[in-house]
Length: 276
DNA sequence: CGCACTGTTGAACA
DNA sequence: TTGTTCAACAGTGC
Image (cartoon, rainbow, N blue to C red; front, side, top):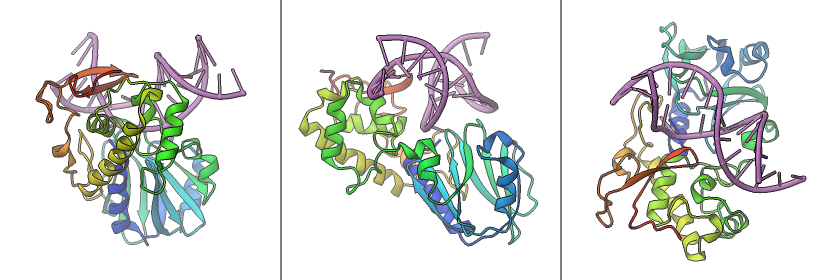
């Protein structure tokens, strides 16, 4: 389900609902979801209060009063819901946090790809590989033009898998990558060292703007995404290429085409996005 | 039945 | 050594 805008939408929802809540007990119907020691996971969470929820890239970071952090990655279809205590778990509920205020925070994951682990706060930057290697957040201050130009020039890899690689920059996934490449008029198979300085500046601006816009619209709902309130995003109505194969390009009218790039479905405009 | 799918990772390979 | 590619993870829906 989620790229950065969706994870940020979940973070905000969770903050509104469970920041300040205390955990009484934890049940784990699907132990594989827990990467760290399971017994410690359950034990250490008892009595802890969720002080706040941060985000790094697509990772959610529940900051606990116990000086520990619950690191949670939703991968493809993970989602959280908050229900009255004792509510029946869903078919794919993997973890249940029983809260002291008679509510249950449930983690549900249809495809069972999501993972969570408990670490000492601050240690996530070393212990969680995805975070340790993660590139800058896609913001004006963190993602500088100099940095982007430098790493693009360094490799000779196709631009699409490059942008999907969280080690280069955080936050983009398959949907928004197709969108920003279309906006930037760059063919998804363009080699990174073939991207001109002008295109780099433009691409950077589009990445930052697009992810911020999508976040304002509470993300894109494809298939299963909903926030903790069970609400869907609205950004799917704003997408220009993803899911629009065969439909006319909104810039030139040419029918959009779909190809496979680095094992991922990729939609683009064959007239606006010319391979060099 | 076959294929596609929002993401990441570790092994294989150059 | 370093960078890149690709299968695998698991379930649902078309």
